[in-house]
Image (cartoon, rainbow, N blue to C red; front, side, top):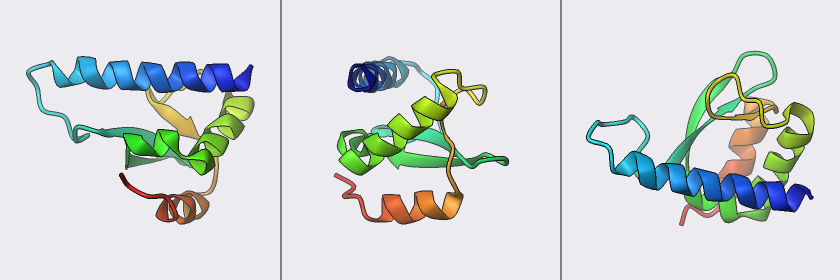
Length: 97
């Protein structure tokens, strides 16, 4: 069931990206990227490539956050509950394309 939700989440992010790219305003999130909020208490915003959504390590991180937080994201974007250092270390190992 979690895999189905993850696929639904990825599809929503991709369709939001397409919708957002058709608007006539500039965003601080470049095309092909998405903003995520990381941290356990204080949330820090990171902009990551959408290609991370296809990476098993990033999917595991999203699954863990889904189990802990559900899909209610008060920050208005994806919220990942982990230490910033762990997030930076994990994303440094992921290919960007």
